Length: 183
Image 1: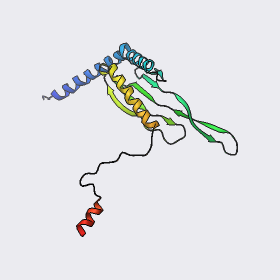
Image 2: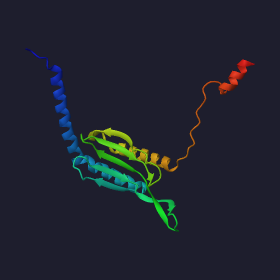
Image 3: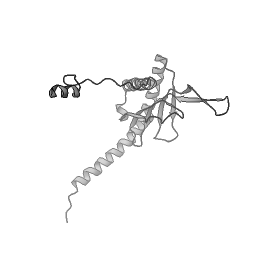
């Protein structure tokens, strides 16, 4: 009995290749990428005078993260404690840009939005992209920082004004066109 194992062999080869990539990606993170991300963020913070900290989260090997953290601050709001003249300070977390090593050695870049403790639900993080270590370059990190600061600025400047949508057609409401047809 002869079996055609061509497709199966191809899948096994692909699987072994992926496992090799994971090992290589993890080595790249440790040998070069982690330090490059940190140095790029440090230099950008210094040159732009951005008030931020770089936090290294390395409790779990091969699931490390580098976080550009804008920190926490007083939100400017205080909650009155019932039946007292005491006011409780409400804290605002100002957002973060995260470079997270994934289980497969790739790097996920995401934005953690600002939020005010006890005021609504925090907005879910925004995944900017997932990259192989060799794909992540300094110019991408700068672009990520630009997008991060744009998102955080928009969050801080939030209002419910939506941009006006342009009307397609004759710029007349449908009702007035209907009245014209009836006359």
